[in-house]
Length: 321
Image (cartoon, rainbow, N blue to C red):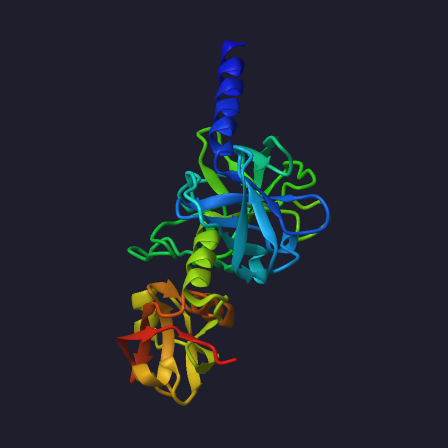
């Protein structure tokens, strides 16, 4: 009984702590929604679908004070919006990008009224925007995404995470919970909750995606679409390269756009791309996911040229509109 009470008290304390970093977002005609304070300089993250207007937006803090907010920008693909107020705020304590596990107890928090509301559930699934791939037992020293392996199952398959994806939970998303926080018992915020991806779906946008959205919108005012500027098709690798990489297929470059990041870096028609920042590139989806990296980021492209492996640095560009 004491263990149950201790857990209950700890969760209530976590809710109380995080409440200081939740705000009420008034940006639509019906029920207000929720937002989470990203940084002390007044940056707030909420969901895009609850921000129905670009002006006349206000937020109400946990202490009851109301402030005018400006819209920094939107990320419709991830249902995120970033607001800014001219005030010193208490930011949430954000968790590490990949610290949640399936089965973890979590709380969804909302602040659409005068007090914080909570809903208890478990993490049902963790999804990546990347495709599944098999990791061969002999491959060593390969980094996947952030340098760690993630979500391995009994079949020896795993998810490679570069960004995106979402967290699925069984929490009840009450009206006004969109834009609120998903937290664990230690008070860490693991993402932004949204009901905007489908009726009845409890989805959380993870910290890595939130961070990328905030940084991109603060820098560009819009979500930029990265690109390298190559046309590709799958191609089998030479036996020597196949053995060295334990990878059978790469992407053969069949065209290079003029004045593109690829042409500026010296990529050539006939090169076969095999990795980007040590992540295997074997199909179109791998290249598309790599291009979702932040515009301006320099990546190491490993390729086969003349039967030999070479590495060339390429800076991700912004796709022309």
